[in-house]
Length: 253
Image 1 (tube, rainbow, N blue to C red):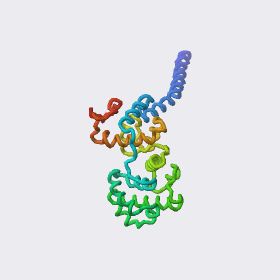
Image 2: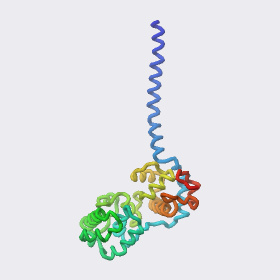
Image 3: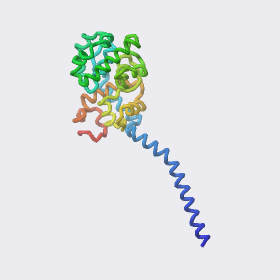
Image 4: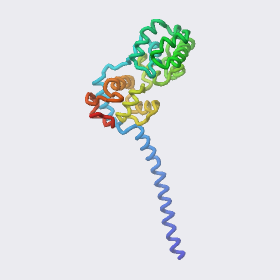
């Protein structure tokens, strides 16, 4: 009987060792799979090239819709564009930039008066604080010039990566990242380029699959496409030149 018990236990120990080894070897694969799923399955180089090609066909000269004459005005307009349409911002800034023509004019403006000037853009109190804070820092620390680096721009009150990417890309032609607004978030998901929901993670996913020389134009192209065709509630898939490349559950055709 002892011999039988001994022979019965050995396979059990062997099986346990094999199970542990298999678990250890599969752990990295499982982690890699989760990472791949987060990025989306539609990120093969061939598919990404096809998407970029179609965007180039539809929007070869896409650019920022915010009207501005200089980098500082673009900075202010981008701050105002949070939770507001570019069209509304452009309406407001037509008179705003005539009233406050320089960074100093914004920096030392009367807060209550500025609040009323930008009220139509919404969230006017918090935007006023951001505009005053950013303007003062530009005047007092950057000699009246908008900084040209992501690190410095992120020190300005009310400026996060989205705003910094808009300013760097549009005003200075510096590709430090990809602008991720509501349109880009939606399209990145529908095109299966990212399965994340956090803007920072979506940006990182896109930066890994989109060539850096395309980052600036790609941002504008997705935003334009989101406004004109791939709208949130009723995407106009029948008019979309990306329709054959898209397998989103939101498709209307």
